[in-house]
Image (cartoon, rainbow, N blue to C red; front, side, top):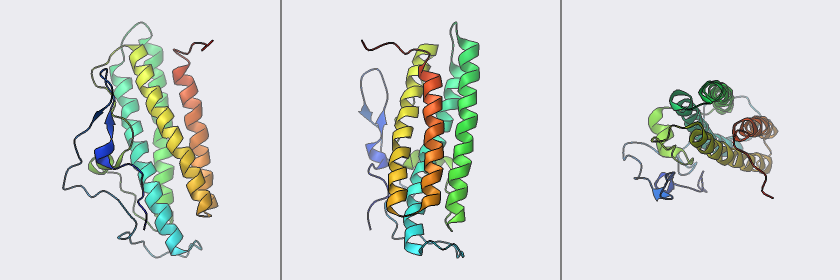
Length: 201
């Protein structure tokens, strides 16, 4: 069976001023979903074949970890932003967080609908997320806009890949969910990066 994600936790990268540096490997006591071979589902009358549901649940589990990580990064920006545009960015980052929380819930519920278990603890998310680490030493509005827009863009890219994966597995419901999430993330990326966009020419 193929791996659920193309990147392992040890391949996660840290976002800092000196360029990307490898993050320490995941804790040994955290189970990382590397394949679907040991994934057991609850019984359901859902008409998608079990093998398809197993693969979809595995893929959605990765998107869930990424989405929960993104949500925590939104709150990190919301709590810590400073500068002349504090209030507008403080409120914007919280709005993004609320929207991302909705995506988290929708992805988790889809996993359970298909007979899976939505694994969303902090330890699981830390081990599985493929997003770049959010820089903790930043404070200015511009720095937070840059960091959060990086994460939104990265998550948006993984979600678009998820649309193709769900279509390949002929799961129209999950493909539609990923499409909805993709549209929402694109909108929030627009709202965030508009604070520092300039013309390229």
